[in-house]
Amino acid sequence: SQQGEEDPQALSIQEGENATMNCSYKTSINNLQWYRQNSGRGLVHLILIRSNEREKHSGRLRVTLDTSKKSSSLLITASRAADTASYFCATDDLSGGSNYKLTFGKGTLLTVNP
Amino acid sequence: DTAVSQTPKYLVTQMGNDKSIKCEQNLGHDTMYWYKQDSKKFLKIMFSYNNKELIINETVPNRFSPKSPDKAHLNLHINSLELGDSAVYFCASSHLGQSEAFFGQGTRLTVV
Picture 1: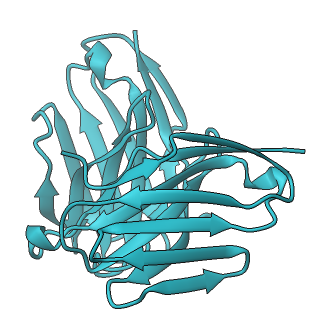
Picture 2: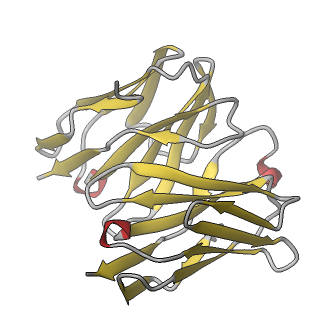
């Protein structure tokens, strides 16, 4: 089954509002990452949070990680129309041993209306 | 300078053909990947290479053959293309497989 699952699948907000996306995963991890994908483009790394961290900030982004619940959230504050994109969480899978890979969720499509 | 570049960006081809997608990274990374993104935007890893050596082959049909001539290049050759191969293929790279991955712009493959 899929490692990372984001919810909601789609989110539509007005410019200036905050957007919160959640991610749940199933196995033990080293770190969890969030990526953004604009339509028709590749993925861009946003932020990485390690398994021993609980919260991390980067500009308008705030990420939390709860390893006991195997969940993470991405908060984008004061959203802008340019934030419109799909957002994916990605985890590495410790059960894979040295065979490193990132496992992605299905993503949340965020639409920020001007 | 483009960090991870893949070509072509679009590829339309008929069933049964053989095609290749090329990927190059100029970041000095030692690990490169191919991911497949389906029509529902689900991203799934196909292959992972570290220092030109295959370390992950995620149950991909053997019609798909990656080749890494050096650490900066990872090409993907697909034989006998099928309709179900239509997807966007992304190349990516990272350091040591333990940090953020840098993605190419993707190759949209359409098999008709």
